[in-house]
Image (cartoon, rainbow, N blue to C red; front, side, top):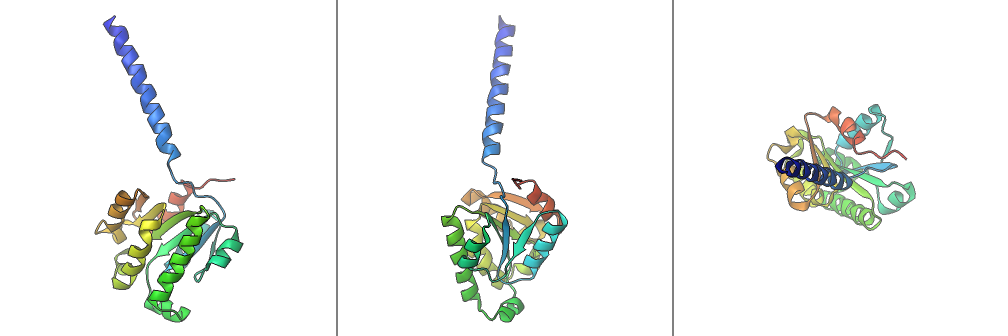
Length: 190
């Protein structure tokens, strides 16, 4: 009789573990095409992310000065926001940091009200963690559904902490070229 109780307990434990694993997998963010990429801070990292995704077979559209109207017209279901400021990029775009942050927050508001998946990507490493970039990172990272960052850009664990406190799914990678394969793991092909 004791042996049967152990078997029964083992079966219930296994069923509970399978049920828990199933529930956990349902909470995983699902990146749905079409994908739109924009920058939060006008760094060249957004173009780099678009190239890395293309090399991984992921189709996306890059719009560095994306606004709500263009986002609505795009039909995109996932918005990838590449986090990292560039004074040179802002100057070339003819906007200041306040205008850029306002633009990004408007498109995030629109995206959230239209149930889009929001993916924040930071590949700029420590070089994109200065005071200019921090304004964009702090102002937008907590709004994401998924954060994908390189380890070099997360040396202070900022992204880890934000993800934990806001319930955001989080992936840390060794280098930029792992972004494509990481996103493939979340991509839903329809």
